[in-house]
Amino acid sequence: MFTAVDALAHDPRPEGAFGSTDVLRIHVGIYSVMYEISDQQVRISVIHLGRLR
Image (cartoon, rainbow, N blue to C red; front, side, top):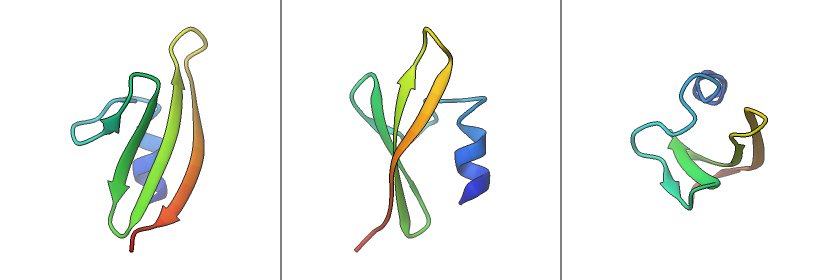
């Protein structure tokens, strides 16, 4: 899971990511990662990391 989150630094909008332009969500195994992208500062902030039900 941490590898997938680290990969967001190189590709913040990977295939399979969904959501709005600035707030996206990806599924990594049984986990869901919600994160915010700020292109102006090249910053990715993980907002929520939770287990899928």
